[in-house]
Image 1: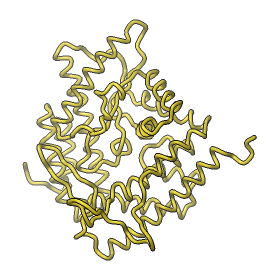
Image 2: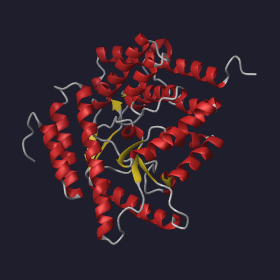
Image 3: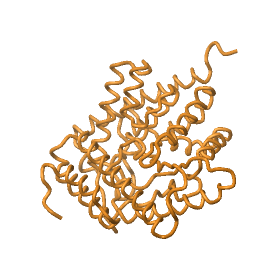
Image 4: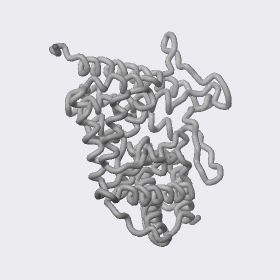
Length: 364
């Protein structure tokens, strides 16, 4: 690889736009990692995330276009209907780290009567090629199989609405988990209106049936803030991460989940956590000062995430999201303790807000 210059991110984006094969994208993703590492100590975390997520979006979008062209070359033809390749998880929220994996789905316009099977077959083939391309580009598949090549995450628009209705009708733990995953979706390629229509259907269900928030809240509060008695930070007890602090599931996920549920309760369609916080402040769901602290804690959580170690094996990046013991300086522990306490306050607000929505005082 060539030397990284001050305009490295712009150069990288130009190279992605001209990439012709998945192998090229793999090399460019590795270049992204190199560029990130070179700037990690000198650039603000928010700036790095901005660049990282633009590049991730471009890599994924380019992979989708390559899959379309490959399907044409193999005799599968052009897409028979408008469709959208959608991202969920941290990708849906535009919060990917350098080591993010695949979390995605696909929605296509409703086919004409009699064309359902052929449309389903086409998009099944396309989703399979996209997954292959993303793996070649360095994105390992989601271990929970939240992937467009899985039938559960690939439907027509009407199929998606029926799927959501089914999950709402039977809010067992797994279905609630799926609902929350789906609530973070955004289109990365194709017709974004299809993804917007799914989210509108989702939000309309909650606005007309606020009691549906109760099972969502149980899942939202599943991950506990690692604070013990007297506010002592609870560290990992076993394995290679022993003595470290779980940033991903102890700070980032509890905060993101809490903000997401407040956004759903308030009818906010945004997927990105910072945008959700901004809208919650505008709607007076979060007081100005509390919202400002929420933004600061979220940005600090993202900064801490970038400081956790990662591995690079077989072309894939992986990280466990744990801040190792040797990095837990006194200043770091003080910051974490403050942030953990704030997230606990935020979770309490979620409980209060959802209970009032589900059981309004004037409801007969």
